Length: 416
Image 1 (tube, rainbow, N blue to C red):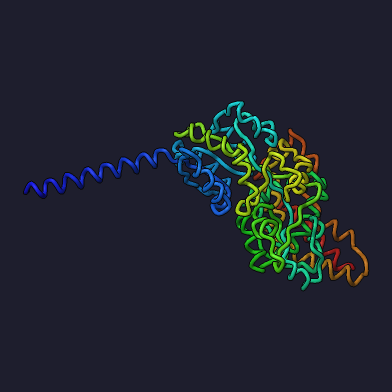
Image 2 (cartoon, rainbow, N blue to C red):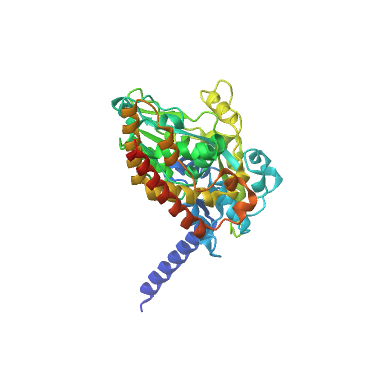
């Protein structure tokens, strides 16, 4: 080989080694965030972080809560440094598996909205609220007022026009369902859910899909969280938009949590990222039009979002202990009482509405049959009952129970 060629290949090898070295440093220095949020909803926050001096680049790993939880059963878990989600159930499961590192006291600002059981490992840096995103044009066509609470979704005119996700697919939906059950009581809460589901036309696979479907005109009202709705309504007010978001009154808020993993290979930068989120500059990014969230530090009274933030601050808290204890029961109930029987439920309510219209009054006996439950409020709150809950035995009993109730409903209708 000539000296010229040897020199060329030597130079090429040096360039390649330098490039690989730089690439290795970048990859080794990156922060990996496992999150249940859509990449679009966090992109502005990540961009602002990467403007900070010496900030590590971020790679996001978007998964469902259940998928992220299972990912941590693998020791490698894709080198995740931080977990970011609004699901307290996810952080609880990871903490129980000792996958979350203890956080220093310097992050005490972020403890205010964190359940006591998670305060050693987890902080909250933003707030959101739950409510209904409405397509006003479709509601007007259906001759239904804009709903402001769960009870506003039960009108027979809304059949096929309500959109929501399910607790087994979305922890956001699970929290909303649990909060409703705690607010209304076990029996009344499920009765209201049952009646709303009679109007559901679409069950979205993810909570952020609800907003997309309402915007696309596939439904008139979607049960959702404000940060997705705000990106279309509150922050980007369009006088010609048909979309409107209303918060549920007297209803718990949704903190956004973050924690460092025990196996983080970049804990220094992970800690710096949390410090940024809790800093004044980090908090100011949250109410930007591209984020749609609310900071945990009070805004100035002159700020246009001050009143809404104070409204969220004043909302009641959810009983996290009860939610964690009966999470499997609630998910199973929703799947087997509602989802698996949805077509039958919707047909039953159509028949009921027809019979009530013919009778000229409500038929409480038929409503009681349709909303009867195979598990009592005591069983759904008692610690011993919840600890001994056996899903296989329960499902067999529930299946028989619902078959019997359907027979009772048909018999009662025929006797009218």
